Amino acid sequence: SKEEKFDVIIMDALDPDRFVEIVGNLYEDSHFIPSLFNALTEEGVFAIQLGESDDNSDPAEETGPFIDTAHMMVALQSEFASIHAYDEGHSHFLSPWSYLVCLKNYKSRAKWYRNAAEIGIEIHQRLYQSISGAPILRHFDAPTMIGYQIPYKSIETTYCRKEITPWECDIEYRGIGPEIEIIPI
Image (cartoon, rainbow, N blue to C red; front, side, top):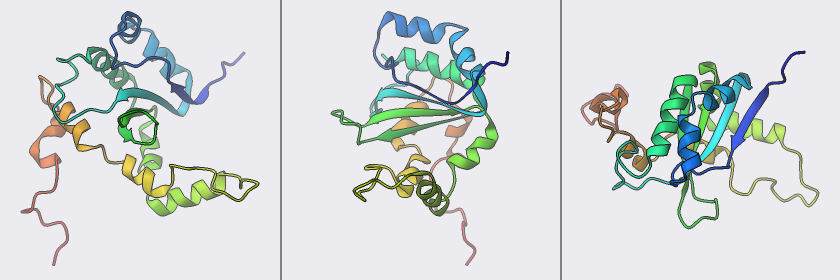
């Protein structure tokens, strides 16, 4: 019999930003992340909450108290084609909360980076109307999704503090250089 695969797996069980022995063991287990990856369809998505959002003064995850998050990131990067972090302020915690969306197939990035019009149309087509006529979604719409597409500065800053600086942190890939002509005039 053929194994059933999932389009989406959402994991909200363990906070990788809190030191708990089982969390560290889980993310260092060489079978855990590959089993999640293999349980997804070809265009599958794995989503996980990372805990409280980074602050600009936080150390790199690999050197600070968030070592379990660093181990998890290494494991996820070894399997998933595209990984996206975003912050959400409507989670009803005391601070914004960070989430990670991992795409099994690199082609799925096109869905992540759709424009506001495409996102708005799909939301409208896929949701049913409520009986009262009130909006179904409280804190999500096309502009919110557009905001998720670009990581917050604090996520970028912490990521770029790694002992071996990632290539994406090179100055030519960060921010906007006033000397670079974007639109010819």
